[in-house]
Image (cartoon, rainbow, N blue to C red; front, side, top):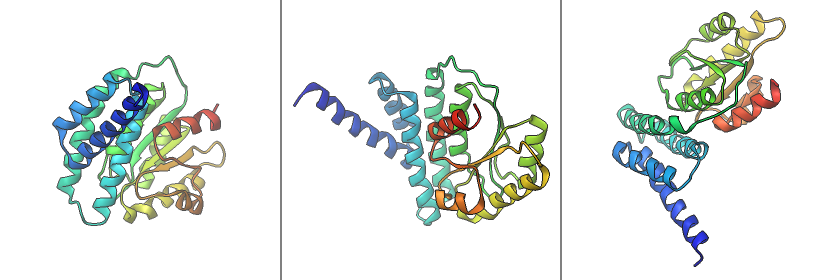
Length: 219
């Protein structure tokens, strides 16, 4: 076995351990594996991708009634411990004038996916206003106007909140005759098919996906 192949196999094992530690809500193991990933030269972007994969699994388990709120909160603690370690590694010379309001839609109190995306975008030089969780559709639009945002980013983990996402789009269309902010949606409860159906501007699978979209759509 070559050294490169051995390193690749070790990385895959560590990726699995890292994801599993978040799904299990094991903060200590998440901290240890995050540090090991960074030591091995794994990029912060890749680590955030792994976090997103883990949280998709947490979201699935919650929607399937396998996990309870307490389980999700444990995973949240694990994610937050990872983000605190990874943040300093996001050294970027990029600077953007694009302003973004981001929040978790009404009826959903989960913040993990939102916080991951926010951390990444701020590290990339974007101005980001975090509206928090359980945000009513009207507040997204009002805050976007006040902030001068070009983008409204909506996170959702629960399928029961989909109607509220659609309401954001309706209100935006009613209140902006021109230069309406782009509506970007993401999270375990939404899909490309749903995005197309409600007329969102973009469905993003993760922070890197959103960054690429912003560079193309708003340059």
